[in-house]
Image (cartoon, rainbow, N blue to C red; front, side, top):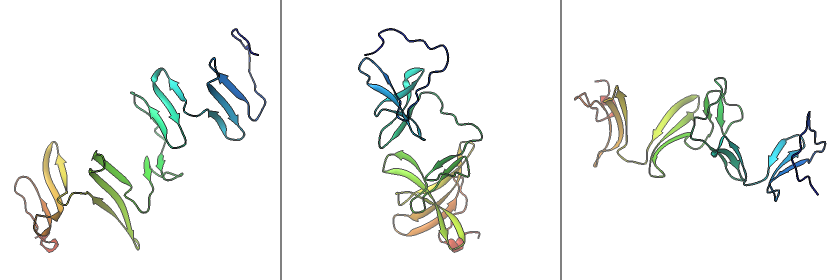
Length: 178
């Protein structure tokens, strides 16, 4: 049986059990369980909501979802790690075989990948795109001032450095700097 009225506790309330459970709702559809030496477990497929119903944290066995129309802010001393438990920078992405960062325009088809490539004692940055004629543009105050392209110019492979105001273009790597 239960208490059919409000229960007020003037001081601390302690549930002294390693599997203590707090149940909420007329059918006890939401519960919070103490897990020994781990923390608290919100029963599956439920949300912790903040302020309004549209802002919440929820999780299942696959995904952790944070939904908010406001900014999600970490303290200025926080580092975020993806694939690492010891991030060394504000954002540290660890993956030794795949590109570490993908900026996507159209899911699965239009994107730029960034990857750290390590050969022997030398590290380098690899930037790739699924497009055969992809290029890197440097934007200076809203004006595309220069670009680098390596790819296929419809008929022959080429490497080019130039700018939109008629700067030099190299057709082979040996032409660069001439």
